[in-house]
Amino acid sequence: MTTLMGCIADDFTGATDLAGLLARSGHSVSLRIGVPEGSPNDAAAFEVVALKCRTAPVPDAVAECRAALRWLQEAGSRQIFWKYCSTFDSTAEGNIGPVAEALMNDLGAKQTIYCPAFPENGRSIFMGHLFVGRQPLHESPMKDHPLTPMRDSNLLRLLTPQVTKPVGLVDRLTVERGVAAVRAELAALAAEGVANVVVDAVADADLHVIAEACLDMPLLTGGSAVAMPLPALLQKQAGAAPPTTAHLRPKIDAPSIVLSGSCSAMTRAQVAQYAAHAPHYRLDPLDLAENGISDALNWLMQVPLNEAPMLYATADPKDVGAAQAKLGVAEAGRVVEVAIAELASAAREAGRRRFVIAGGETSGAVTKALGVTRLDIGEEIAPGVPWTYAESGGSLIALTLKSGNFGQPGFFAEAVAKLEAE
Ligand code: ADP
Image (tube, rainbow, N blue to C red):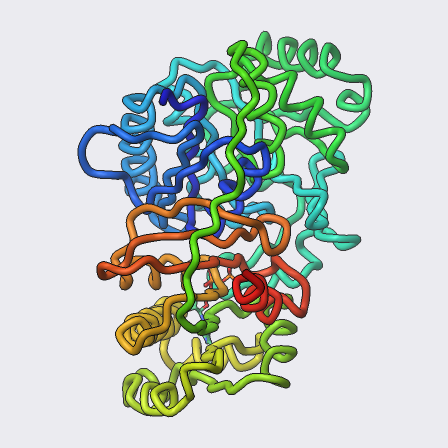
Protein backbone atom coordinates (compact mmCIF):
# COMPACT_ATOMS: atom_id res chain seq x y z
CA MET A 1 0.00 0.00 0.00
CA THR A 2 1.21 3.51 -0.71
CA THR A 3 1.14 5.84 2.21
CA LEU A 4 -1.20 8.79 1.71
CA MET A 5 0.41 10.91 4.37
CA GLY A 6 3.42 10.61 6.64
CA CYS A 7 3.43 12.14 10.10
CA ILE A 8 6.22 12.95 12.51
CA ALA A 9 5.24 13.40 16.17
CA ASP A 10 7.50 14.90 18.84
CA ASP A 11 6.39 12.47 21.55
CA PHE A 12 4.64 9.16 21.96
CA THR A 13 1.32 10.23 23.37
CA GLY A 14 1.14 12.91 20.70
CA ALA A 15 1.70 10.23 18.10
CA THR A 16 -1.03 7.95 19.48
CA ASP A 17 -3.38 10.90 19.75
CA LEU A 18 -2.79 11.76 16.08
CA ALA A 19 -2.94 8.10 15.01
CA GLY A 20 -6.25 7.66 16.87
CA LEU A 21 -7.83 10.64 15.16
CA LEU A 22 -6.60 9.54 11.72
CA ALA A 23 -7.95 6.02 12.40
CA ARG A 24 -11.44 7.49 12.87
CA SER A 25 -11.50 7.69 9.06
CA GLY A 26 -11.37 3.88 8.85
CA HIS A 27 -7.98 3.93 7.09
CA SER A 28 -5.19 1.70 8.39
CA VAL A 29 -2.88 3.63 10.67
CA SER A 30 0.42 2.42 11.96
CA LEU A 31 2.62 4.10 14.51
CA ARG A 32 6.37 3.50 14.52
CA ILE A 33 8.37 4.12 17.63
CA GLY A 34 11.45 5.92 16.45
CA VAL A 35 12.57 5.96 12.85
CA PRO A 36 12.20 2.35 11.64
CA GLU A 37 15.31 0.54 10.51
CA GLY A 38 15.40 -0.61 6.91
CA SER A 39 13.09 0.19 4.04
CA PRO A 40 9.32 0.37 4.49
CA ASN A 41 7.70 -2.80 3.17
CA ASP A 42 4.37 -3.02 4.96
CA ALA A 43 3.36 0.62 5.15
CA ALA A 44 -0.16 1.59 6.22
CA ALA A 45 -2.27 4.28 4.53
CA PHE A 46 -1.22 6.66 7.29
CA GLU A 47 2.17 6.27 8.89
CA VAL A 48 3.03 8.08 12.11
CA VAL A 49 6.64 8.12 13.29
CA ALA A 50 6.79 8.79 17.04
CA LEU A 51 9.94 10.49 18.21
CA LYS A 52 10.88 11.56 21.72
CA CYS A 53 12.30 14.95 20.82
CA ARG A 54 9.93 17.45 22.51
CA THR A 55 12.62 18.64 24.88
CA ALA A 56 15.65 17.59 22.81
CA PRO A 57 18.22 20.20 21.76
CA VAL A 58 17.46 21.71 18.34
CA PRO A 59 20.23 19.95 16.32
CA ASP A 60 19.23 16.51 17.66
CA ALA A 61 15.51 17.09 17.04
CA VAL A 62 16.17 18.38 13.52
CA ALA A 63 18.40 15.41 12.64
CA GLU A 64 15.85 12.88 13.94
CA CYS A 65 12.94 14.54 12.15
CA ARG A 66 14.86 14.69 8.88
CA ALA A 67 15.63 10.96 9.18
CA ALA A 68 11.93 10.29 9.79
CA LEU A 69 11.09 12.40 6.74
CA ARG A 70 13.39 10.31 4.54
CA TRP A 71 11.79 7.05 5.73
CA LEU A 72 8.27 8.41 5.19
CA GLN A 73 9.17 9.61 1.71
CA GLU A 74 10.49 6.13 0.94
CA ALA A 75 7.12 4.75 2.13
CA GLY A 76 5.51 6.95 -0.51
CA SER A 77 4.32 9.95 1.53
CA ARG A 78 4.11 13.09 -0.53
CA GLN A 79 2.66 15.16 2.26
CA ILE A 80 4.15 15.44 5.73
CA PHE A 81 2.49 16.45 8.99
CA TRP A 82 4.68 17.67 11.89
CA LYS A 83 2.74 17.06 15.08
CA TYR A 84 3.48 18.73 18.41
CA CYS A 85 1.42 19.27 21.52
CA SER A 86 -1.88 21.16 21.44
CA THR A 87 -0.45 23.28 24.25
CA PHE A 88 2.59 24.11 22.05
CA ASP A 89 4.96 22.65 24.69
CA SER A 90 8.33 24.23 24.03
CA THR A 91 10.72 26.83 25.38
CA ALA A 92 12.44 29.76 23.60
CA GLU A 93 15.14 27.21 22.72
CA GLY A 94 12.37 24.81 21.64
CA ASN A 95 12.45 22.89 18.39
CA ILE A 96 8.92 23.24 16.95
CA GLY A 97 9.96 26.09 14.64
CA PRO A 98 13.45 24.82 13.76
CA VAL A 99 12.11 21.38 12.82
CA ALA A 100 9.36 22.93 10.68
CA GLU A 101 11.89 25.11 8.84
CA ALA A 102 14.24 22.14 8.28
CA LEU A 103 11.41 19.97 6.92
CA MET A 104 10.22 22.84 4.70
CA ASN A 105 13.71 23.15 3.37
CA ASP A 106 13.98 19.41 2.58
CA LEU A 107 10.53 19.38 0.99
CA GLY A 108 11.12 22.54 -1.04
CA ALA A 109 8.16 24.21 0.69
CA LYS A 110 7.99 28.01 0.95
CA GLN A 111 5.42 28.16 3.73
CA THR A 112 3.72 26.11 6.41
CA ILE A 113 0.99 26.56 8.98
CA TYR A 114 1.08 26.19 12.77
CA CYS A 115 -2.28 25.12 14.16
CA PRO A 116 -2.20 23.39 17.56
CA ALA A 117 -5.97 23.88 18.10
CA PHE A 118 -7.92 20.84 19.37
CA PRO A 119 -11.46 22.12 20.05
CA GLU A 120 -12.77 18.72 21.26
CA ASN A 121 -10.18 18.90 24.05
CA GLY A 122 -10.67 22.61 24.75
CA ARG A 123 -7.62 23.93 22.88
CA SER A 124 -8.51 26.90 20.69
CA ILE A 125 -6.58 29.71 19.03
CA PHE A 126 -7.94 33.22 18.64
CA MET A 127 -5.90 36.14 17.29
CA GLY A 128 -2.83 33.97 17.68
CA HIS A 129 -3.48 33.34 21.38
CA LEU A 130 -3.82 29.75 22.56
CA PHE A 131 -6.52 28.91 25.10
CA VAL A 132 -6.98 25.82 27.27
CA GLY A 133 -10.70 25.76 27.94
CA ARG A 134 -11.54 29.32 28.99
CA GLN A 135 -8.04 30.12 30.22
CA PRO A 136 -5.18 31.59 28.19
CA LEU A 137 -2.35 29.03 27.99
CA HIS A 138 -0.15 30.98 30.43
CA GLU A 139 -2.87 30.98 33.10
CA SER A 140 -3.72 27.29 32.58
CA PRO A 141 -2.09 24.43 34.55
CA MET A 142 0.50 24.34 31.72
CA LYS A 143 2.26 27.25 33.44
CA ASP A 144 3.53 24.67 35.97
CA HIS A 145 4.59 21.89 33.59
CA PRO A 146 7.74 20.18 34.96
CA LEU A 147 9.69 20.38 31.67
CA THR A 148 8.01 23.02 29.48
CA PRO A 149 6.25 25.60 31.65
CA MET A 150 4.21 27.78 29.28
CA ARG A 151 4.36 31.42 30.41
CA ASP A 152 3.04 33.12 27.25
CA SER A 153 -0.13 32.40 25.25
CA ASN A 154 0.77 34.26 22.08
CA LEU A 155 1.88 31.69 19.50
CA LEU A 156 3.51 34.31 17.28
CA ARG A 157 5.62 35.49 20.21
CA LEU A 158 6.46 31.90 21.18
CA LEU A 159 7.42 30.96 17.62
CA THR A 160 9.42 34.05 16.61
CA PRO A 161 12.59 33.33 18.66
CA GLN A 162 12.61 29.75 17.34
CA VAL A 163 12.60 30.47 13.59
CA THR A 164 14.74 32.29 11.03
CA LYS A 165 11.96 33.36 8.62
CA PRO A 166 9.07 35.76 9.29
CA VAL A 167 6.02 34.73 11.30
CA GLY A 168 2.44 35.75 10.42
CA LEU A 169 -1.18 35.07 11.29
CA VAL A 170 -4.32 34.00 9.47
CA ASP A 171 -6.93 35.05 11.99
CA ARG A 172 -10.36 33.64 12.83
CA LEU A 173 -12.15 36.34 10.80
CA THR A 174 -10.43 35.05 7.66
CA VAL A 175 -10.99 31.38 8.55
CA GLU A 176 -14.66 32.21 9.06
CA ARG A 177 -14.82 33.44 5.42
CA GLY A 178 -13.87 30.00 4.13
CA VAL A 179 -11.32 28.06 2.08
CA ALA A 180 -10.78 30.65 -0.66
CA ALA A 181 -10.23 33.45 1.85
CA VAL A 182 -7.65 31.39 3.78
CA ARG A 183 -5.84 30.50 0.55
CA ALA A 184 -5.78 34.16 -0.53
CA GLU A 185 -4.43 35.27 2.85
CA LEU A 186 -1.73 32.57 2.82
CA ALA A 187 -0.72 33.63 -0.71
CA ALA A 188 -0.55 37.29 0.36
CA LEU A 189 1.63 36.34 3.33
CA ALA A 190 3.84 34.15 1.09
CA ALA A 191 4.32 37.11 -1.26
CA GLU A 192 5.71 39.05 1.73
CA GLY A 193 8.06 36.15 2.53
CA VAL A 194 6.08 34.97 5.58
CA ALA A 195 7.02 31.30 5.84
CA ASN A 196 5.62 30.51 9.30
CA VAL A 197 1.89 31.13 9.61
CA VAL A 198 -0.10 30.66 12.80
CA VAL A 199 -3.74 29.92 11.95
CA ASP A 200 -6.63 30.59 14.34
CA ALA A 201 -9.22 27.86 14.96
CA VAL A 202 -11.87 27.65 17.66
CA ALA A 203 -14.12 24.87 16.34
CA ASP A 204 -13.88 21.71 14.26
CA ALA A 205 -15.51 23.54 11.32
CA ASP A 206 -12.51 25.91 11.27
CA LEU A 207 -10.15 22.93 11.09
CA HIS A 208 -12.01 21.59 8.06
CA VAL A 209 -11.61 24.93 6.29
CA ILE A 210 -7.91 25.08 7.18
CA ALA A 211 -7.19 21.46 6.16
CA GLU A 212 -8.86 21.96 2.79
CA ALA A 213 -7.18 25.31 2.18
CA CYS A 214 -3.75 23.79 2.95
CA LEU A 215 -4.22 20.41 1.27
CA ASP A 216 -1.52 21.14 -1.30
CA MET A 217 1.12 22.25 1.19
CA PRO A 218 3.98 19.72 1.29
CA LEU A 219 4.26 20.33 5.05
CA LEU A 220 1.52 20.99 7.59
CA THR A 221 2.21 21.44 11.29
CA GLY A 222 -0.01 21.48 14.34
CA GLY A 223 -1.82 19.49 16.97
CA SER A 224 -3.57 16.32 15.90
CA ALA A 225 -7.02 17.83 15.29
CA VAL A 226 -6.18 19.81 12.15
CA ALA A 227 -5.00 16.51 10.60
CA MET A 228 -8.35 14.82 11.28
CA PRO A 229 -10.10 16.03 8.09
CA LEU A 230 -7.07 15.13 5.94
CA PRO A 231 -7.75 11.39 5.34
CA ALA A 232 -11.11 12.06 3.67
CA LEU A 233 -9.73 15.02 1.72
CA LEU A 234 -6.64 13.14 0.52
CA GLN A 235 -8.67 10.07 -0.39
CA LYS A 236 -11.03 12.26 -2.44
CA GLN A 237 -8.09 14.02 -4.08
CA ALA A 238 -6.51 10.65 -4.97
CA GLY A 239 -9.84 9.41 -6.38
CA ALA A 240 -9.57 6.35 -4.10
CA ALA A 241 -12.50 4.33 -2.70
CA PRO A 242 -13.44 4.91 0.97
CA PRO A 243 -11.77 2.45 3.35
CA THR A 244 -13.65 -0.49 4.83
CA THR A 245 -11.37 -1.38 7.73
CA ALA A 246 -13.17 -1.99 11.01
CA HIS A 247 -11.32 -1.08 14.20
CA LEU A 248 -8.60 -3.46 15.17
CA ARG A 249 -9.47 -5.32 18.40
CA PRO A 250 -7.38 -8.41 19.05
CA LYS A 251 -8.31 -10.40 22.14
CA ILE A 252 -5.93 -10.02 25.07
CA ASP A 253 -7.16 -11.75 28.20
CA ALA A 254 -4.26 -10.99 30.53
CA PRO A 255 -4.58 -8.42 33.33
CA SER A 256 -4.05 -4.66 33.41
CA ILE A 257 -1.78 -2.18 35.18
CA VAL A 258 -1.91 1.63 35.38
CA LEU A 259 1.40 3.54 35.48
CA SER A 260 1.38 7.32 35.76
CA GLY A 261 4.35 9.68 35.52
CA SER A 262 2.33 12.69 34.43
CA CYS A 263 1.84 15.57 36.88
CA SER A 264 -0.66 17.41 34.70
CA ALA A 265 -3.85 18.65 36.36
CA MET A 266 -6.15 16.15 34.62
CA THR A 267 -3.87 13.24 35.44
CA ARG A 268 -3.88 14.31 39.09
CA ALA A 269 -7.69 14.12 39.06
CA GLN A 270 -7.56 10.74 37.27
CA VAL A 271 -5.08 9.33 39.79
CA ALA A 272 -7.21 10.55 42.71
CA GLN A 273 -10.35 9.01 41.24
CA TYR A 274 -8.76 5.67 40.40
CA ALA A 275 -7.03 5.47 43.82
CA ALA A 276 -10.44 5.52 45.48
CA HIS A 277 -11.27 2.10 44.00
CA ALA A 278 -8.05 0.27 43.11
CA PRO A 279 -4.83 -0.83 44.81
CA HIS A 280 -2.35 2.02 44.43
CA TYR A 281 1.26 2.90 45.27
CA ARG A 282 2.87 6.34 45.23
CA LEU A 283 6.39 6.57 43.81
CA ASP A 284 8.52 9.19 45.56
CA PRO A 285 11.37 10.53 43.37
CA LEU A 286 13.65 11.08 46.38
CA ASP A 287 13.10 7.54 47.63
CA LEU A 288 13.59 6.16 44.11
CA ALA A 289 16.84 8.12 43.70
CA GLU A 290 18.15 6.65 46.93
CA ASN A 291 16.72 3.13 47.03
CA GLY A 292 15.51 2.26 43.50
CA ILE A 293 12.28 0.42 42.78
CA SER A 294 12.53 -2.59 45.11
CA ASP A 295 9.78 -1.47 47.54
CA ALA A 296 7.45 -0.64 44.69
CA LEU A 297 8.21 -3.92 43.00
CA ASN A 298 7.54 -5.92 46.17
CA TRP A 299 4.24 -4.11 46.53
CA LEU A 300 3.30 -4.80 42.89
CA MET A 301 4.11 -8.49 43.12
CA GLN A 302 1.71 -9.04 46.02
CA VAL A 303 -1.25 -7.49 44.14
CA PRO A 304 -3.41 -10.34 42.79
CA LEU A 305 -3.29 -10.58 38.99
CA ASN A 306 -7.05 -10.16 38.71
CA GLU A 307 -6.77 -6.63 40.10
CA ALA A 308 -5.55 -3.66 38.05
CA PRO A 309 -3.18 -1.73 40.34
CA MET A 310 -1.87 1.80 39.82
CA LEU A 311 1.68 2.99 40.49
CA TYR A 312 2.12 6.74 40.18
CA ALA A 313 4.69 9.49 40.63
CA THR A 314 1.96 12.02 39.88
CA ALA A 315 2.22 14.86 42.37
CA ASP A 316 1.11 18.47 42.75
CA PRO A 317 3.36 21.38 41.69
CA LYS A 318 4.60 21.92 45.27
CA ASP A 319 5.86 18.33 45.63
CA VAL A 320 7.27 18.30 42.09
CA GLY A 321 9.14 21.54 42.91
CA ALA A 322 10.51 20.03 46.13
CA ALA A 323 11.81 16.92 44.32
CA GLN A 324 13.30 19.08 41.55
CA ALA A 325 15.00 21.36 44.11
CA LYS A 326 16.73 18.33 45.64
CA LEU A 327 17.53 16.33 42.49
CA GLY A 328 17.45 18.89 39.66
CA VAL A 329 14.66 19.09 37.06
CA ALA A 330 16.14 16.64 34.55
CA GLU A 331 17.29 14.13 37.18
CA ALA A 332 13.92 14.11 38.97
CA GLY A 333 12.23 13.40 35.63
CA ARG A 334 14.76 10.73 34.71
CA VAL A 335 14.54 8.89 38.02
CA VAL A 336 10.76 8.64 37.71
CA GLU A 337 10.85 7.62 34.05
CA VAL A 338 13.45 4.89 34.68
CA ALA A 339 11.46 3.53 37.64
CA ILE A 340 8.17 3.40 35.75
CA ALA A 341 9.87 1.76 32.77
CA GLU A 342 11.40 -0.92 35.03
CA LEU A 343 8.06 -1.51 36.73
CA ALA A 344 6.37 -1.92 33.32
CA SER A 345 8.91 -4.59 32.31
CA ALA A 346 8.46 -6.38 35.63
CA ALA A 347 4.68 -6.30 35.20
CA ARG A 348 4.98 -7.87 31.76
CA GLU A 349 7.29 -10.57 33.15
CA ALA A 350 4.65 -11.22 35.82
CA GLY A 351 2.02 -11.79 33.12
CA ARG A 352 0.31 -8.42 32.80
CA ARG A 353 -0.46 -7.55 29.20
CA ARG A 354 -2.65 -4.42 29.25
CA PHE A 355 -0.86 -1.20 30.11
CA VAL A 356 -2.49 2.16 30.82
CA ILE A 357 0.31 4.75 30.79
CA ALA A 358 -0.10 8.44 31.65
CA GLY A 359 2.42 11.03 30.51
CA GLY A 360 4.16 11.71 27.23
CA GLU A 361 7.76 11.33 28.39
CA THR A 362 6.68 8.49 30.65
CA SER A 363 5.11 6.64 27.71
CA GLY A 364 8.29 7.03 25.71
CA ALA A 365 10.31 5.45 28.50
CA VAL A 366 7.82 2.58 28.93
CA THR A 367 7.53 1.63 25.25
CA LYS A 368 11.30 1.67 24.98
CA ALA A 369 11.66 -0.63 28.00
CA LEU A 370 9.02 -2.99 26.58
CA GLY A 371 10.90 -3.13 23.27
CA VAL A 372 7.87 -1.97 21.30
CA THR A 373 8.63 -0.63 17.82
CA ARG A 374 5.23 -0.63 16.09
CA LEU A 375 1.72 0.01 17.39
CA ASP A 376 -1.39 -0.75 15.39
CA ILE A 377 -4.21 1.57 16.27
CA GLY A 378 -7.50 0.39 17.77
CA GLU A 379 -10.54 1.94 19.34
CA GLU A 380 -10.47 5.34 21.07
CA ILE A 381 -11.09 5.47 24.83
CA ALA A 382 -11.27 9.27 24.97
CA PRO A 383 -10.71 11.83 22.20
CA GLY A 384 -7.12 11.41 21.07
CA VAL A 385 -6.40 8.36 23.27
CA PRO A 386 -6.83 4.99 21.54
CA TRP A 387 -6.01 1.50 22.69
CA THR A 388 -3.11 0.21 20.61
CA TYR A 389 -1.67 -3.25 20.05
CA ALA A 390 1.95 -4.31 19.83
CA GLU A 391 4.43 -7.16 20.08
CA SER A 392 6.50 -7.10 23.24
CA GLY A 393 8.87 -9.82 24.39
CA GLY A 394 7.15 -12.35 22.10
CA SER A 395 3.62 -11.55 23.35
CA LEU A 396 0.81 -9.38 22.05
CA ILE A 397 0.12 -6.53 24.47
CA ALA A 398 -2.38 -3.69 24.61
CA LEU A 399 -1.16 -0.22 25.49
CA THR A 400 -2.82 3.10 25.88
CA LEU A 401 -0.56 6.12 26.07
CA LYS A 402 -2.34 9.11 27.56
CA SER A 403 -0.96 12.58 27.31
CA GLY A 404 -1.12 14.60 30.55
CA ASN A 405 -4.28 16.60 30.22
CA PHE A 406 -6.31 14.21 28.06
CA GLY A 407 -9.32 12.17 29.15
CA GLN A 408 -11.90 12.75 31.87
CA PRO A 409 -11.35 12.06 35.60
CA GLY A 410 -12.67 8.48 35.20
CA PHE A 411 -10.24 7.68 32.36
CA PHE A 412 -8.19 4.90 33.99
CA ALA A 413 -11.23 2.82 34.95
CA GLU A 414 -12.82 3.50 31.54
CA ALA A 415 -9.68 2.29 29.75
CA VAL A 416 -9.49 -0.91 31.80
CA ALA A 417 -13.21 -1.58 31.38
CA LYS A 418 -13.15 -1.04 27.63
CA LEU A 419 -10.91 -4.05 27.03
CA GLU A 420 -12.64 -6.15 29.68
CA ALA A 421 -15.95 -5.58 27.90
CA GLU A 422 -14.78 -7.58 24.88
P1 ADP B 1 2.70 14.99 30.64
O1 ADP B 1 2.15 14.23 29.47
O2 ADP B 1 1.69 15.28 31.71
O3 ADP B 1 3.48 16.20 30.21
P2 ADP B 1 5.23 13.61 30.98
O4 ADP B 1 5.43 12.18 31.35
O5 ADP B 1 5.50 14.00 29.56
O6 ADP B 1 3.73 14.00 31.40
O7 ADP B 1 6.13 14.57 31.85
C1 ADP B 1 6.12 14.54 33.23
C2 ADP B 1 7.57 14.58 33.72
O8 ADP B 1 7.55 14.81 35.12
C3 ADP B 1 8.30 13.26 33.49
O9 ADP B 1 9.65 13.51 33.12
C4 ADP B 1 8.25 12.61 34.88
O10 ADP B 1 9.31 11.69 35.09
C5 ADP B 1 8.35 13.82 35.77
N1 ADP B 1 7.79 13.57 37.10
C6 ADP B 1 6.76 12.75 37.41
N2 ADP B 1 6.49 12.77 38.71
C7 ADP B 1 7.36 13.63 39.26
C8 ADP B 1 7.59 14.08 40.60
N3 ADP B 1 6.82 13.62 41.60
N4 ADP B 1 8.57 14.98 40.80
C9 ADP B 1 9.32 15.43 39.78
N5 ADP B 1 9.15 15.05 38.49
C10 ADP B 1 8.21 14.15 38.24
